[in-house]
Every structure is written in structure tokens, then in C-alpha cells.
Image (tube, rainbow, N blue to C red; front, side, top):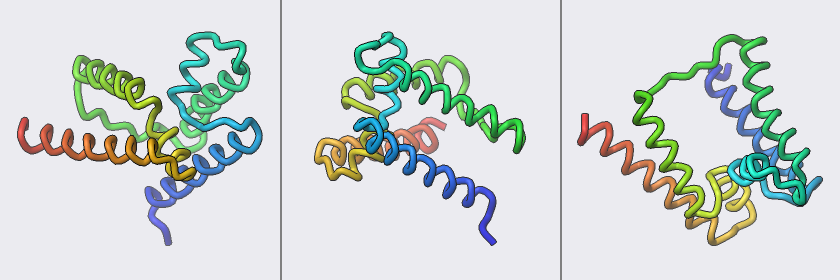
Length: 140
């Protein structure tokens, strides 16, 4: 029998892959959440505001359906408000500097064998490892 956490990861990963393939086949677009959200926030009508809003709405609806049918989302905060705000801003800056986020580069870009996406993903992962090491072992 598969552990519930493992099954959830497998199902979630499969759905992310399926959504990415469908986005590419149906719209010819890469599933990069930061780019999709930017198009919604800037009201980018020329590039398809309705599909962007539907995609973001689907992400929110998924969390709502999870809570209705399974229960509370298993979220465990690892930091307090001010640190989370700084972290969020740094992620946003990194997303802009890297021309995309982990979903665009890590899922779609690597699947297309994009050198830029492979470099970006290796950078994301290296910075994540360093950040965890520093925060858990040097600062604690």
C-alpha cells in the first residue's frame, strides 16, 4: 500500500504534468505560474486574460475542493510574518531576474531541454540547499 503523503505527491505531480501538457497542446503556452499571474494582475487582454484568470481560479478551487472533501490543508508555517514577507519579495525578485519560476523552468523548461531552464533550475535548487543549511544550522 502506498503511504497517503506519497500518493498525494504522485497524484499532484501527475496533475501538474497533465496540466502542463494540456496547456502546451491546447494553447501553445508554457505553464509558468508567475507569467500567468502577471498577465492577470496587469490585465493583459491581448494575450488572453480569460484563460489566465481561469487557470489561477482553478488553483484556488483545487485548494477549496481539497478542504471540502479531505479536510484542512496540511500547512505548517516555518517562519513568522515579517520574514515571510521578505522571503516572498525575494522569490518575486528572483522570478523576475530568472525570467520565470520553478513551474515554468523546472517542469516545462527542463522537459523541453532548454539550457536556460536547466541553468535556472540548478540555480534554484542550489540556493534552496544553501538557504536551508544556513537557516537551520548556522542561524538556529
